[in-house]
Structure formats: C-alpha cells, structure tokens
Length: 435
Image (cartoon, rainbow, N blue to C red; front, side):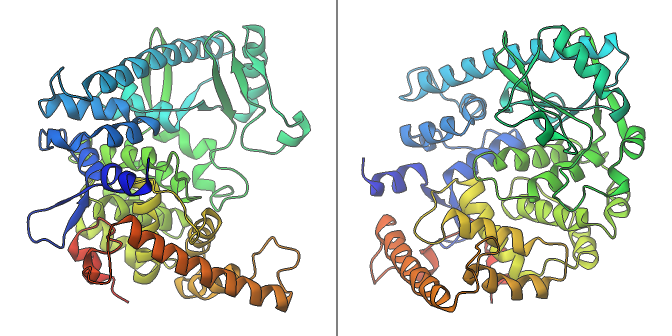
C-alpha cells in the first residue's frame, strides 16, 4: 500500500466549525468524543485504515465505545474488526484482574499495603470500563521495609523473577527484577520508590512513601483491597512520568488518563492543593506540559487561571519551547506519525529532553542546537570535521523530510501554507505561539 494512501486515510482531517483553516485530525476527534462521552462523531470517520492504525496502538476498545455511541451498526465495514478488538481487550483485562487479585492476596498474607501505579490505577478509577485502558505490565508500590517479605511471598505462590539483567543491576533502582505470572502471561513490577533515580523527582521528599500515604484511597479488586493515589496526586504523578521522555508508543494513554481524570473529577479536584504541592519542583513543569497539551488538543478543558498560575511558577518552559513540545506531542504521541529522515526519533527525544530539563527556559533553548550538533553521549562529539558532516546530514534530512511530507500530503507549489504540516491544534494556539 502506498504511503499516499496511508496519509489520506489513517490521518484524515475534517474542517471544524469556525473556518477552513482549522483542521482537526479524525483520530483526535474520536479521542475527544471518548473523553467527553458524547455522540458527536461521524460514523464515516471509521475507515478501515484508521481502525487498523488505532487497534495497533491498543485503542480498539475506545473505538468500540465511540463507534457504538455514534450509531455504528453491525453491517458497517469495520464493525466486526472493532468488536473483535473490544472482546480481546475484555479477555486480557479479565486475566489481568485475576493476576492482580493473586498479587494482592500474597500481599495480604504478609500485611503489606499495595499501591497501584500507572494504568493499573487509572483504569479502575477514570475509564468507563477497565478494558478501555490498554496496559502492559502491572506496576505496584510497596513500603521498602516490606518489599522483601512481599516478594518472597510472591515467589512462594508461583511468581517467577526474570530478566536479561542480573539481580545486582537492579540494586538501588526504583523497582526490583520483574516478576512473571506464567498462568496469566503477565509481567509485574514491584516498586519501592515512585520515580526512577535518573529523573528529576527521584529524590523529592514530597513523593516519599511517608508523604504519599496520607494521599491514598482504597479500591476493591475482586475480593481483595488495594490503594491508589487520590485524584490530585494521581494527576501530578501521571504528568511527571509522562513528561520524563517522549513515548510515541504509549504516551497517548497517559494523556487520556489525565484528560479523563480532569473531566470526571472537574467538580471535586482541588487545584489549589495541586498548585501548592508542585510549587518549586520540576513537577510544576511536567504538570504544565501535560495540562497545556490536553487543553490545547481539546481532550480536556483546564481552568485558565490554573494554566496562568503554572506559567508564572514554572521557569523551564516558555512559549517557544511549549510550541515545539506541543508539535512533538500532536505528531508523535497523539497521532503516532512515523519518524522520518528529519526529525529522527533521536532528534525528537533530544528536543523533548532538553526543553524539559529543570533549568531556565532560555538555557534549555540555547543548549538544544549544541546537543543536536554534538550528541551528548557521542565520544567524538567535539570532532570539528564530524560536526560539519552532522550539519550537512541534518540539512539534507530536513530537505528530504520536507519534500516527502509535501508529497505525502498530496500538495504542490500552489498549496496554501496554512494547510501544510497542520498540527491539528486550535487557531488560538497557533496565533499565540508564532515565532
């Protein structure tokens, strides 16, 4: 199948109300409809290529939910494919629930409290049904002093620890060697710390076990009981883990987690507590990035005064860096566009990493060209001949990427500039972030 066909069907755009220049990708419209729980989605949006693309990313159950509410019938060309993806997700989620119950029973035997992290927590709290939230392994947090007895109990009840790395390599990490549940074909990570040691919040006392415990709430999983972070702390945690790196494969689920949390808890969310909690921390930068991304993409509406206060408190982001980061978010996280000649995945990761570092926005922008020219981990990064070659290579890549995008979009020299490379974001964003 030609790339031209993929471009026009997997990432079609529709003209939104308000003018022909506001182009919104169809997949984004479907995600908006899911979060808002509305019927406002055209059934014709569910083309076979779009459906296959979304199912491949784990979004099949979400398609099924929106498809049904939009009036999709069993005779539609994609109905059976969507239904099959939904049923598969339900079966996988049922197995995950049984594995989680086994894990919680083992924890109960040694009186170890278990906090669900990431998708294991958000699926139970904010999604219409747990199977709507695709998840890989199950991540749990336990107190460090009980991690040993708990893991011994897991091993005694049939769990196995497996990894290509040695046990010594996990010493000092935020989780131990992963556990494998053979009967359920599922991986489980047991954390003793909230954040990995290489990221900015690893040593932040406000995320220690003692600090987290007062902000926990109880949830029931089968016949067992577990804990999750409360809504406010969950939003901060989800934002921070999402902002640590550009995840083009699974980053969309963290955005949906945040958008659904904000939408479902709109009347009860304590924004003042959140703003006080992140003040003076890199968490404020991560939270600003997440909230601005879900707000600008239309997945959830964030109070304007919250965004304003975060902008005043955050020193690591400015309008230019936010514009660049939002383009990366829309293209590679929301729409999962393939990386090309330029930017490559390495380029995108470096831009993301540099612009979200915990230092001034000006310093982040200044160091970015240097790191693109002289890759930080390259032992020959200071070789002037190689630097010249990198500049030439990057220029060629950018030119080829530009030509390729124009051909992929079916445009020519007469195409309107506004339609070229549209980010799918509202006009207000594009106007506010001109450079």
